[in-house]
Each structure stands twice: as structure tokens, then as C-alpha cells.
Image (tube, rainbow over all chains, first blue to last red; front, side):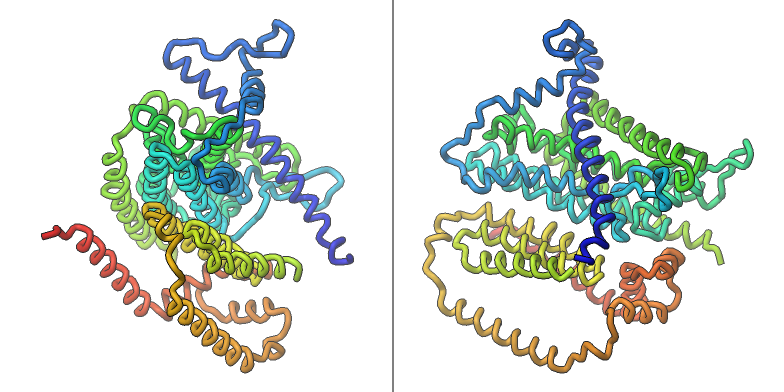
Length: 379
Length: 187
């Protein structure tokens, strides 16, 4: 009992963070990124998009901001049809297995520096689990996401889903390698696997892709950081492209390619089970953007080392949270923009790109980073 | 937190049984994945975060995905109706007995009391004796956390550099072998 009382404050803190981040921020963001996707694509194609649904029973439309609620309601009310030829257990398990890993990875995502709450001495760290093996945790959990798609393809027991599932798993396994290799230069430079301290270092010395600090009003950049920009930019390009492939987004959405495979691995799914695949994909996209921002674009920190990490004032803590989510939203819009501007790759082109180009370039990039670090070694 | 140990051990054993008992290869493979996750949780309870996460990353995330991939391409119906192979069964039982005997012999010579308790303190003093750890690892140790990733890396790349290179060559050989086998034209 005494032991329980000892861990109780930590338990409450963790619960508040989990509920706050996952249920109050990420899930609504998932819903609204679907809305953003529809509005943005309409903009690019010179259409109007969903702009009618607002507050029910009134004429207030709020530019269609009620649309995600209506969509959610529609998914719940639709008939949940299970085809007779499916393998029941795995058919039910698959949607959950895509959603859960996508949401689990946000446990190590630092969504702010510190939050100094009045009347509490110790400032709260704005991360659910401050793991020292943060990045490895992300890759480990994200690699479990393949199971949902593989199982969906297999359990549906029909041809198109099966082909979609096979395509998806080989694509994800291939691109996981370039994704992992592209992060290694970051680890070499910061010498740490803890995402929180990687962001802290970027806060003090400038972002990975913007290593500039201000001395008064004069920008300062060291030769070492300037040289490291070359491998870091290559890493960033590989990381972002692999992220598109990992999250099955266009131009790499071969697993659910409509013109060839109907809807790929979720062809046989309906109602909320289909919605879980759909939302899992968007959740993976949001959290993937979160990691791109954390690793390369300074996470919660303002550019040029401005502001503080929020360990002494509530204001800067809130600014940190705002900065982080502003960057993430920017990144999601970039995802959407790419989807509606670039045509789909062919499957053999996709595998070629992953294995013949990115894999080698990422390996070479690690050597390049090591060479630069050797030259500028502080003795 | 002994409770967590029992929960994860139970998960491991139950799903381990599932691997053996189930007649459907896909169910077996998935049970093995859950069993690996339980094992990873046990490693993490022992403060071996790195080993725990790598367990998930390598076995659950990579090896088993490929296993599952291959199983799904096979015809499962014929697999499920195959009669039990008694030789394989006997082999499995013998292997398990040998392992238990070995485990017992190791445990009988292991004196837990001499290492001091908690075990973490012992690990920390060992870690302090390690030379040339980077700044990030030093900070961890000041907070009484074990910088296990740094320690593992340093040990492998300084003391066991040659074996590591040999393992790397071995992996390269097997990769090239696979490529040659799969590209071989059938005559």
C-alpha cells in the first residue's frame, strides 16, 4: 500500500499526459487532418470542398469545420459487415493492430520543454516517457505496425487485399532500413538516443537544419555546423521520403492503389473497422511528422536559440508547446500538398528507389558524417 | 514491482505454449511475437532498456514479419492436417530438458548475495570504471541512471572489435549467398 502511494503522483502525471496528448490533441488532429486534406485538395483542384457542415440545426457553417464530426458519426452508424469468407479472429484484430502502434510511438515524443505549473516546485517534463532509448523505441514500435496490414490482407481471404498486404509489407520492410540509416547521422552528431536531450541540444545550438544562434543581433554559425549541413540535408530528404513510403501515402500508396487493387488491404472492411485503418494512417502521418520535426527542425524550440525551455516560466513552456504543434501542422500540410501534386510511382520503381538509391546514399552519408566529425574533432 | 514481473512472465509462458500447441502456423507465429514482447518487458524491468528494445526491433519487428510473410504465401490447409511428427516432438522435449539442466547448473553456482543489492548499484560502479564514456553518458550516471547503450557500444567496439568484424563478414557472405541462390537460373 505504501509503495502504491509512492508511485501515485507519477501515475497521475502520466495519465494526465497520455489523456491530454493522445485523446485531446492527436485524435482531434487526426480528424481535422482528414478535413484539411479534403479542403486543401479542393483548393489545388479548383473546387470548393466540404464547406457546409457546421453547428447542427442552424445555418452557421463555420467553413465546414463540423465535417469531421459528421464523418465520424457516419462511420459509426454504417453497417459493420463481416464477409463470410474471412478468417474472423485476425480480421477483427488487424484494424486494432494498425491503430495501436501508431499511437504508442507518441509516448517518447517531446511535445514541449518543461511546464512550470504555479504552486508546484518541480517543473513537468512535456513527454510521456522520457526514455534514454527513445529513437530505438520509436523504430521498434513502428515496425510492429506492419502486422496490422499483413494480417488484414491475409485475413480478408480474397485476392486484392492479399496483393495489397504483400505490397505493403515488402514496402515497409524496405523503407524501414533507409529510415533507420538516415537517422544515424543525427545520433552521431548529438551522441544521444534520448529525444528530449536531442531537442535540448538543438535549442541551445540551433536546429539541426538551421544551426544558427544569435549573438546580439549578429547570426553566428560555426564551420563544423556548416559542414554538417550537407549530410544532414541528405538525411532529411531520405527520412522524409521514407516516411511517405512508411505511412503508405501518395506518391508511394501502392498498397491501396485504387486503379489496380480496388482499395488494397482494406477492401473487405466496412464501417468503424475501415475507419480505424483510415485513422491509423493519419495518426502515423501526424506522429511521423512529429519525429521529423523533433529530429531535424528543432522540436519545440524557437529558431536561433530564442526563448527558454520553460523550466522557469509558464509562458515559455506554453510557447514551446505551441511552436511544436505549429511545426507539426506545417509538416502535415506539406504531406497533403505532396499527395495532390505528384503522381503515383510504379511498384518496381518504388522498390528500386529504396534499395538501389536510398540505401546506398544513406550508408555513404553515415561515412561522410563520420569524416566531418573526425576533421572537426575537439581535442 | 513484482506484480509486473509475474504478469509478463505469465504472458510469455501462455503465448509460448500457444506457439507449440496451435496447429495454425499464423497463430503460432503471432503467439511467438507476443511472447517476444513479454520477454522485452522483462529485460526492461532489469534496467536493460537497450536489450529490451532491440529484442522488439529485431525479433518482433523484423524476423517475425518475414516469417509471417512466408507462412502466408504457403498453403496452410495442408499444413494443418499434417500428422504429428513424433521424432520432432521427442527432439523438442530433449532440448528443453538439456536447457533446464544447464540453467540449474548456472543458477546453483550463482551467488546473488555477493553482488550486493540493489543490483543497479553494482552495475553503476562497474559503469564508472569504464573509460572514455561520452558526456551524455557521464550525465546519465550522475543521475544514477545506467547509460546502457553507451556501455554496450563501447564494449563491443573497443574490446570485441575483431569478433564484430568477423560477424559482419559472416552476414555479408550469407547476404551474397542468398542473392546468388535466388538469381541462379534453373537449367
